[in-house]
Length: 61
Image (cartoon, rainbow, N blue to C red; front, top):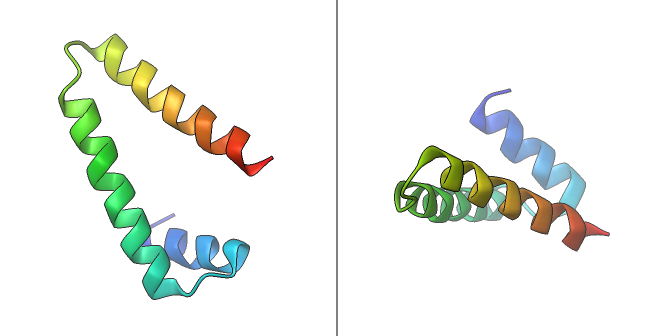
């Protein structure tokens, strides 16, 4: 799945227009990238990534 396909799927599922989805997903990517690059080790990076995904999954419920 490429970036455009992700944006379209998120747009469809959320009811938010594709342009706004793109902005949010790009911002999320920037924040996640910053957090991962500030991790001291690979384990810490994976922990942060897992925590973010878990948070988002639980928020949906």
